[in-house]
Amino acid sequence: MFGKGFILREENDMIIKSVNLETVCGITSKLPDNTLPEVAFAGKSNVGKSSLINALMNRKSYARISAQPGQTINYYNINEELYYVDLPGYGFAKVTQSVKEKWGHMIENYLQTSKQLKMVFLLIDIRHKPSKNDVMMYDWILHNGYRPVIIATKLDKLKRSQVPKHLKEIRTELQMDKETPIFPFSALSKQGRDEIWDFIESMVLQQEEAE
Image (cartoon, rainbow, N blue to C red; front, top):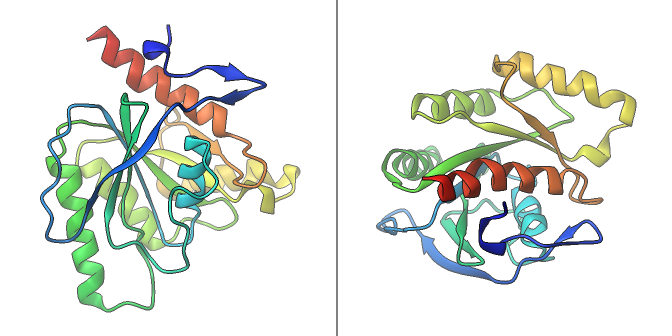
């Protein structure tokens, strides 16, 4: 069963009826007391987080894509059924240590205080080994009680034959257990988008209905 008709398929594309950037939280903002389930997206700057969120919303440029790192937590209300929560990018070199610490506090505060957070996706560039910041964020999410699901972005930058090796490398570097899925994703071809959505639908919306 699909959650309240949330997703309809037509030529393998999902139909998103409504998208609304409902809340933008800065460093000093109070987080909203939402009643809908939240799915969060974390990743280093320029890993393709906004491109992924746009693909999952079936919008070309609703989520802001920029070379500059985000400084806010953005809540996108999807069909009045759940939120995509875009967390600030980390690992951006051209900011001060104090700014990095503030972004870290924002993410930590969100992970520790959100009452509706159901799943955290961590985006990793499939072309490279996870960075120290990636490993730290993975461990940090685990420490806060969530098992991060990996989305390996920029899939179109590799030859198909290279993909298994790079996915194995990500698993090894993050010391992932075998049950944790990795979803390869291409913002160019949208490969992986439907698989990611099906996972959200089955693990979040269906479980919400069952409760």
